[in-house]
Length: 403
Image 1 (cartoon, one colour):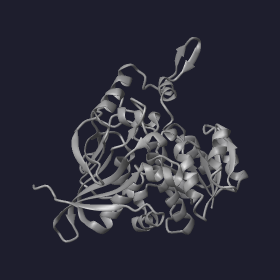
Image 2 (image 1 turned 45 degrees about the vertical axis):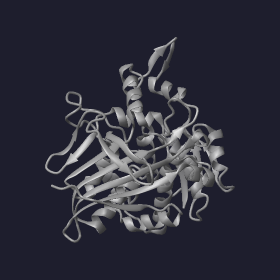
Image 3 (image 1 turned 180 degrees about the horizontal axis):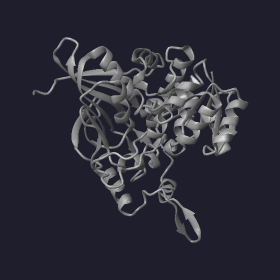
Image 4 (image 1 turned 180 degrees about the vertical axis):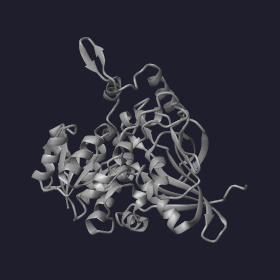
């Protein structure tokens, strides 16, 4: 399989390093910064590095054709989803991403009703993808991605009826030498944390709430322990109800009081905005300034310690007719991901899942046409291959809450 990997940041570089150990993939690695693409391409002697502006649809389609690619793997931030998505359709190749097209809040009731939802622009083109016979597999990182695979697994193998699917993400990571150092793209973090969170309920559909609403303490495994989690906007809530039946779907992130405070301050000052402002005759996006002032998450690995946990908490009725509560999860130790791959835990945990998906598509174990989420495809082949990669998942039975 010949893959055009667009984006050679932390996650893109980790994808290259993971794929280099598997025999199925040859990568052409593209980035607006050729030197960065070349550094990622150093993972394997046969990889090729090229320069590409991800906004250039015609240039992307031409590059896909020139290098006879089978698939485009999007490892850029969500701003570039649609041009890469359209270019892949034009070139008639498969497409994968880890974050979906951007949302836009409802103009009058942002904390009650949805406006343009995450992924709406992509799903609007689903018929075109179906006619092309090509697969656009959207949201196949860790969250969304592995979390969605867990939801499908729970529906198929663990539950006869599901009351709630709740993605719960928490960590005990620390970064030495920094008072504030996000371990993932601050651009994306601002986007998902300050937009109105979306919840799905049967009979009501999708609706929004206030950022950081419904705080709860969730106890994470592997020694991470209790972490306060709050609602944030995330793709799983928009994907899971399309293919998995449940009464309620939520996403809550363990951010911590300090992190939430910083995000709220950025919002109050308008520094979360993407619309350029004039500065000394120049034009600059406030959010891009914030990102430029913070350390690159890809460089934080040597200073990081701790674990990160991504998982899907499911409640309902088990196959035996009894109440059941399960947390399906995946934990990565930063020390291990750094020692084995030279990539910090959060970006490595994100990167391994699209590589697994690409290998399943190459083998034919996953197939389809149109715009599909990970939960539209069988879970067991993915989870088995993830374990074969040396990164096993786990399931923790919990005591169901009394009615």
